[in-house]
Length: 388
Image (cartoon, rainbow, N blue to C red; front, top):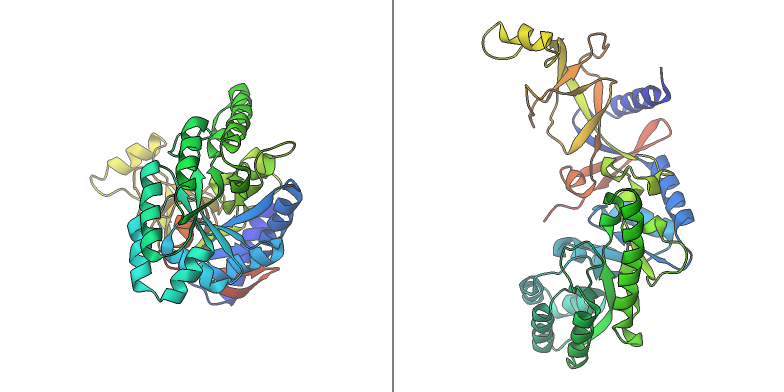
C-alpha cells in the first residue's frame, strides 16, 4: 500500500467515525498550515501579502489564514462576499480584483445603512479599467458625498482589459487628479498568463511583464503608489529581486487544487478534497443493444467493473481509489456518477471515493461546509459563504 493509499484510507475511516455518509468537502488542516508556512517562506520580504477571498470563501478559513499570515489585506471580487468579509474583519482593507459595475455599488448604497456604506467605501479600493468607468465612479462618489478610493487596472500582458499603455494610464491619472471625490491608491496588474507561456518564450514574457509594470508605475504620481499589486497563486512566489510591485495576491495556493500544480508551488501539498460515498460496485453494461457493451470493452473503451457514487459531476479529478476514472461513454451525473474501475479493484459499497478539485472558488461554494481533517480525525466544521 502506497503512502497516498494509506492517507485516503485513514481519511475514509475518519469520515465514517464522524458520520459523514454524504458528499462532503474536506480540508486537511495540517497540510493547509504547512502550505501557509511555505507561502510565507517563499514570499519576497519586500512584498505584502493580499489574501484572495474568492478562492477561500469561508470566514473561518479566511480568519485562520489571515491570523497565520498576519495580514489584513484582502482581494475581493463579489459584492456580497466583500460585505461579509468587511463585517467579519474590522481591520481588513479590500482591493477589488475586477471592476465592479457602478450600479452594484449604487444599489448597495441605497439598500444599506449610511454607517455601513461609509465603512464600506472607507475600507475598499475599487478597480477602474477605463476612463468611462472612472467618470461613473466619480459621479456616484459626488452623489454619495464620499471619497472613493480607486486603483487602475493595467494590462501587463494578460490582455484581459485595463489600461494598455503608460500613456493611456498617465491620461487616466491626470483625469483622476481633477476629480475631487476620487483618491488614487495605486495599480493592479494580473500576470497569471506567465505560467502558461512555455519555455524560453515564457522567460522572455516574464521580463516583459516587469518592464511593462515599471513603465506603468512611472506614469502615476509618487503619492498614488501605495498599492502596486500583481501576482496570483501561480506567480506570487516567483517575485525575487528588484520589482516595481509591493503587493501580491495569493488564494488558491493555500489549498492547492489541481490547476495549481505548477513548479512555483512544488513545496505545497494538495489540501482540499471531495469525498463521496460509494453506493454500488458492479459489472457495468451500457444501455441499448446487448452486443454494444462487449464490443466497447473489446475496444478498450468501456470497463468491465464500475461503481456508482453519491453525487458527482464536480469540477474535480478522481484521486482514490487507484485506477478509478470517468467513463466518456457513460458520461457524467450529478446524482449518481458512474466511475470506471480496474478489474482487480477491491472497492465496495459504503467506501469513499475521493476527488481533487481543479479550482477552489466554484467548487467550495457548491458545498455549505468545510469538514476539517487533522491527524486521523475530523475535528471541526467551517461554514462556507453562499455564492450570493
